[in-house]
Length: 252
Image: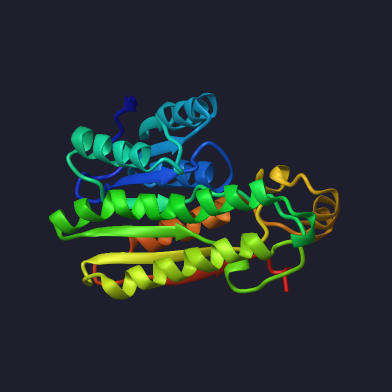
């Protein structure tokens, strides 16, 4: 594990924030934004070289950052990620469950391995983050879960059936978590629309890839989502921002 200290804001305002899928896209933007806000960010992803670059940018700006290679589909790996953060920093205040994949295809393409991958990362990965973090939040009597879902949690389109299914599941799991938990533990779902990211690069189906180029003609930068996450976690303890949909003004 790599760690760099930072002190951009008073200690009482700073939080220890875990971010999965932090090597690119929304995860990277969130890491940069929250570190600039003065929080200590604990970043997890599979691509260690990319994580190192994000960490270097944060530490170079005087921010606090810790990194660890994780695979969110591995429950033990996620538990070790969270437990290590608690050991090193004494607590965890927020987890941003952001890791996700989007290899879109029509169902009749029968890309079952890609379906399985989406289920493993987008659903099981979220559950593993919740399972690893919830005991720590409960023992402290506070905490904040942030799930990065998708506009696909609210609407289904051709070639997106399985992806939308995983994001509907992410929305439902997070909403159920919110209803089950005591008020001291906050829960937020962020549903991005079309965002500049590498997600579309995982599409192998030619038809879905072509359609996605048209769909993504209008997009917003990943920092727009990072700003929404920053807003949610910066609210007073008695304010729980439950859900936000953030998309390009031109996306209807």
